[in-house]
Structure formats: structure tokens, C-alpha cells
Image 1 (cartoon, one colour):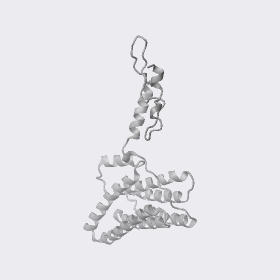
Image 2 (cartoon, one colour):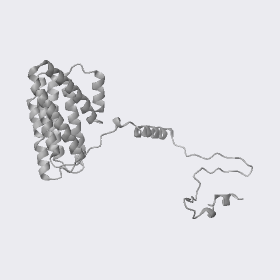
Image 3 (cartoon, helix red, strand yellow):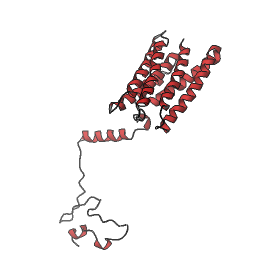
Image 4 (cartoon, one colour):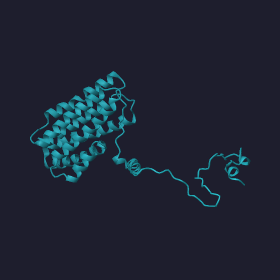
Length: 249
């Protein structure tokens, strides 16, 4: 049987259920000379630099989730009233930053980061269009920065490796950084409240506001069409932040 006839699809299987005829074999064809020499299939070659770029790109695409940028959630602010509420409830963070203690460098950095949280949140909620995605990222990043500055202001003995990792992951996974340093702050607050009875009332208010803020944050993500949930989270978070300032006095 000739070579041309061997490459034609077999018409006897045409129309059989579950069989799909492919005009070309998925395998590489091998070329046979008249003398019977067998030539290996020819593969497309790439320059060395291009192959290295492809390897790096493949490794980068398969990186773990903790090294992937956040996917910003852009729902909310669907009405003018909701936008106004979100902007107004962002302003208390600026006021808290102006009133926060500034007795040393770490406290000053934390106070300024609170101001940055209020500004970033205000800009995000008042924005529209493509820039909104970048301002959402800036909002998340400023919140994470504030938590890092707060834990640093409360605990000078934070491991250097933790702070270095937080700085690297801050623009990539700000929510994870916020969770870690918020946990550090909660532990420090609880220990101080046990030692100092005057902080127990502030700590109780902080616990209630944190639980309410967490519930509103989750509800805002689960029920994105419900208005004013995000504004409620702003207020609960502002109350929690105001109690944290008691730790720095």
C-alpha cells in the first residue's frame, strides 16, 4: 500500500457513533528514504534565551496562590446614596490618624498610615472606571500597611523575618498580611488588658466591634447587592481602631 493511501482517513469508520475522523495524524510523521533510512521527526527549535523565558513563564504561572496578586472585588457604590455613605464613613480613619499618639517613630508611622487608609478608601469609593481597580488595590494595601505599623508600634521584638516577609507580600497579598498582624495585635491587646484593669473596658469594646466588623465584612462579600453593609463595616472598624489607640497612649 502506498504512502498516500496510508495517510487517507478510513471511510469505513465514517458515521460510527463516537468516532471522529482526523485528517492528519496527531503524531509526527517520519520520512523514509528509498534506501530505507529512517529520519527522526524534526522538532521546532527555539533560541536558548527564548527557551529560558518560556521556562520562567511556566514556573511563574504555576506559583502558589499566596504569591498571586489579589483579585479586587469591585461591587458596591451602585447608587449615589451608597457612595456618599461609604465616603463619609471613610473620614473617621483620617480623624483617628490625626488624633493617634505620636510619641515615637513607630507611632508616627502608624498614625500616618491611618490617614492613608482614610484617603485611599475615600478615593476608591468616589472613583469610577478603570482606575477603580487600582484604587481598590491601594485601599487593601493601605489597610495592611496600617496593621503592620500597629503591630510594630506595639511590639518592638517582632521577628525580622516576619517583617521582611510582610514587606514582600504587602503588595501581593495584603489581606493575608492584615490577618497575621491583626492577630499579633489582638494577642498584645489581650495581654495588656489582663495586666492593666483600665484597658479592660476598651478591650471589651474592641472585641465587640471586631466581631461585628468581621460579620459585616463577610456579609458584604456574600450579599454584594445589600446596600450600606460596607459603610457599617467602616464604622465598626473605626470603633475598633479607636480602642487600639488606647494601647499607644
